Image 1 (spheres, rainbow, N blue to C red):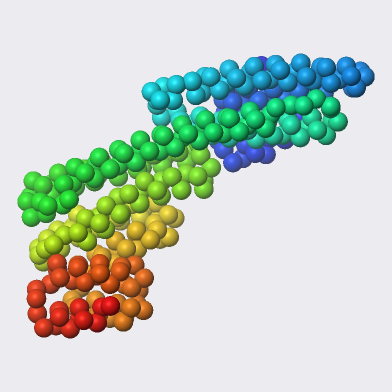
Image 2 (cartoon, rainbow, N blue to C red):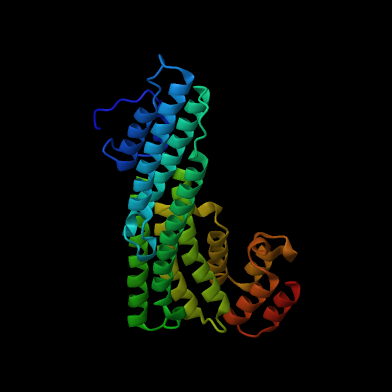
Length: 306
């Protein structure tokens, strides 16, 4: 099997990083050889009979592949291999499509069920992959839940615990990136990592915006806690964060926490400034009430935010 040669161009492999010992790669090389038209000197009827038999053989091989990859996804039999299973199957589907086109071009009269096989494979692969990503998202949320809504910002031990948990989360993000970028196509990798990072960014936005009272000391502690985390995320995933609305929202919220009322009013700019694109008037009014004492200036600024 290792010595099999294929006449089909493998340009699609440029989208992935495969080794020749990869199971899906070897599987499809075998199927290609089985379906390769080596019967040029036989009649059309004999040719169709040979192809029909070969297709049945291929179906059995694919069924074995599917059973190995997806036989018990509920118990996560393959654990983190869900990512590789997904990529393998995308490659298999591509090769089946090529095989189908080759048979059509060869003018065979046999009805081949590759379309149904491809649909089933893609469905199973996608379900398992999405289940795996959901588990990753759950792991992120569990880390964030340990921050306890950031109620202990002025307690030294709590701040240390928050920082430890965020460092652990950052390490997890980096681990996923290093692993997935070796397997997944770039756009898929960026989309999935971006989704998981966005969970953290939304957590910080929602948590801060829900606080009823933020003292000046707490505002400083929020900056100390969040800024290093977002900076490290930016260093690791700089290509993702600038286009994330949650990233921009969080940046704007942190600016507000370190600004005075006049600066906030200027950034709101009667509903047409950069702040108005990222926060609703209600969100901004709530954040101002939580962060600033009840003064005449605060009342004036609040009256202009509509």
